[in-house]
Amino acid sequence: MTRAGGPTVSCPACGRRTVFGPGNPWRPFCSERCRTLDLGAWASEQYRIEADADPDPGEDGAPPPSA
Image (cartoon, rainbow, N blue to C red; front, side, top):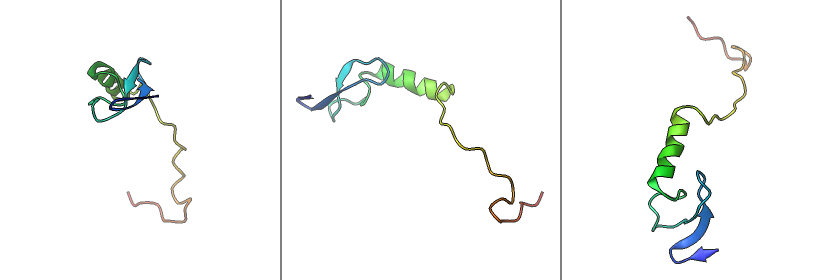
């Protein structure tokens, strides 16, 4: 769906429909409050990105770092 100013999307924090365009300074969020709540969740490590465990030293053929 498109409104004046750009397409509308669901706010990732609250689900409210909001314009995703230059007229919305908090895009993709609907408000500064939702944007700040999301930033706070990242800062407090409520969101995490899974990663593979670090390989053992020397596994890639490089010598281990000197201590």
